[in-house]
Length: 60
Image (tube, rainbow, N blue to C red; front, side, top):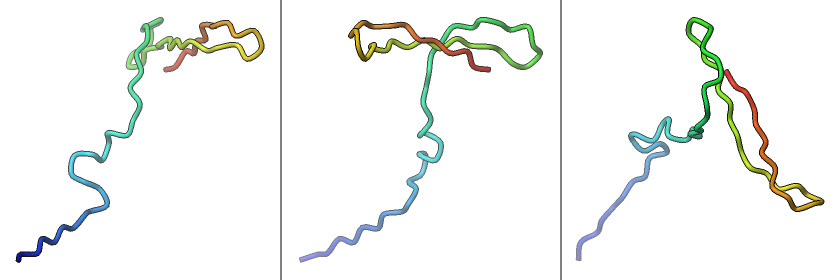
């Protein structure tokens, strides 16, 4: 019989920066030199009326 010993490292190779969220949006402004303003939209349900509302946020 043969034994197999496996060791697990705390951070596997290639997964160091893959924990970030990927968001898609619309470019609203590109007037600045190295920065653009992006409008991120998401759909949220109203707690009382149970209607879906479009909520947005502008990020740089």
